[in-house]
Length: 293
Image 1: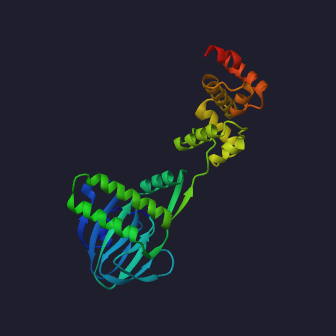
Image 2: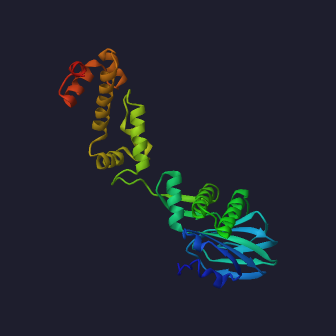
Image 3: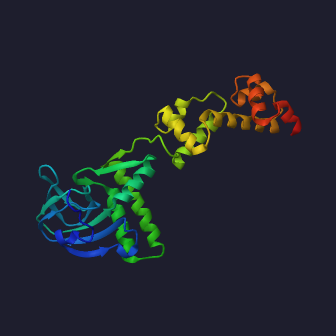
């Protein structure tokens, strides 16, 4: 792969009248530009960023070739064209058009994909589409142009919110996302840790298997056990037992339920099982703990 061109270099290959640029608004990872183009035939080298073209004014037939044969379609107001990053492309059109460009950095696209799908994204590719009728992207484009043009209070916040909305929408409808395989080393992502803890709390009254917990993070049981030890400093079984004892303590402090019932509510097989584990963790029996409270 040759050197990829930057946003600043694109006008060398696709020259037009620049009418608006969001550079002063901030957020370089999601940049907006508006161009007015005369009829042209252009060859654009592979670019660093993903490119989304929203047609604002004019209508024309658009011929484009990326890696395969030429594709042709009619484009105009409300139509979107998508081009993934790092792919050279040929474009031919015969009438004047005004367009807005979204340039989305790979870092922002990967972060949004990881956050949206709660998995570590490794690669994102946009579908090769000359024509997509998408009122959502057309509306976002219009709102962004207005924010950049008027520069009202809170414009940066509004721009960033619109950029996030556009990114998630593009990932849902027009992207293929390749995710990293779960890693057996290291700590859990915060979202996964919360899911694990919530699952244990909600199911503490029953026997929770290692396979169930591993399935939450799409890990094997061995991978999950290693990550759990690294994250919590203890084995999954020991952690769950500790949480069962803590749940029993809550019942003993608040309720006057029989010990055998507390044992079942806290996930122990029976009162005898509760007594053995409770004494090991608390150095007193459940009855003694209740009297102390």
